[in-house]
Length: 115
Length: 112
Picture 1: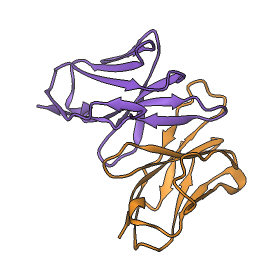
Picture 2: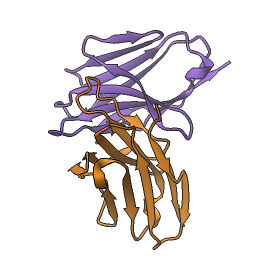
Picture 3: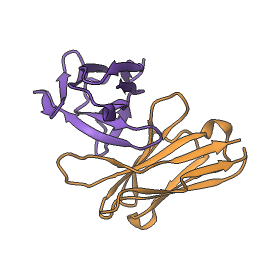
């Protein structure tokens, strides 16, 4: 079974540009999450989708970040315009609803560098 | 105060040694607790869940003390392959949601 995949693996952009990150969860997983780790800090929650609905977006830093999950399959996270402090590793995770352990499976992450 | 606090290390121990990590969490309403392992430049992977009764998986033992809001991980007979960052993770109790709160991680290096 394929795991969570993310694209691109790396992105280097200039301040003010736009970047879109993509996450494909494990097939059949209703729950999809975005997290990020900025340099020297812990991994922090950004938001949680259940199917196509945003269940919790309390971790989104500001309105420059927009996440979508049209059709309840893959998700995109757009940063527009990017700022220097947005640099970090963006992880996506998915989990299966109704499953006892509720384990979240993480993708390999997208390393974003804003110059 | 951070929601989940860990000693960042680094811990450098010889192969075969026993090593223990500790973690405290601030939200007394938290219900689920985990240890994740993260290798360099890789994604976090679940190592084990932590239960009130304590649980063991091979060389790994996890303990939870709800009264003290304290979680521990013990690794016995450490192997070179145990070198990684160990993340203490708590599931924040948000209705209908599963929001993981991570500690900063404890870096472990096992030396031959």
